[in-house]
Length: 235
Ligand code: CA
Image (tube, rainbow, N blue to C red; front, top):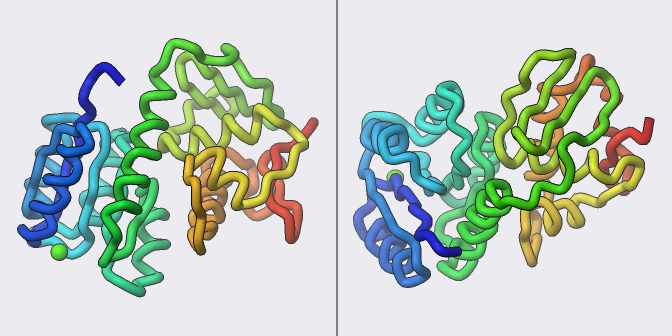
């Protein structure tokens, strides 16, 4: 990595901002900070960071609304939501409105840094020069162009988040091969450990199906092998 990556911290608790900033900078990241949701959104749009750490409970505009506003404006920057402990509903909601990941407070700094690195690395990989193939064949009116990172459905551009795009290209590159949720966490999310976060995979698959399947309720492209995992149709 020859160029410093920038992480935007959107969090209203100064003590958390300080410790995040300290640790991120020690790991070689540049940091930006915002202490309320409106400032966070503005900074994200103006400075185009490489990753955003986004608290949920924020003054002026909550984290979910910030994330949603970014996605509606077509920004696919990786977003990690910082949720309060045990708020299961928050995690799922965060993923559904387009966050890439969440981490539960209180978090260990080691775990948080691993998540940041995993998400930043995906970005670096994607903009790297060695795209494997210009196009991945896919049925059902779906085309995936890995040079322009364009996914089309019946000729119409599909707007995917980075994580959705990577999950799709990973599965479509290995048609017919079934991957468990843990496999996908390791291969697509780059996590060396998993814990109980496999639900992230389910939510991302569901969102992806809503965007690329003719009938998301009975998918024809990304299929479920019950009790095992997911695979891309081999046809
Ligand atoms: Ca807060």
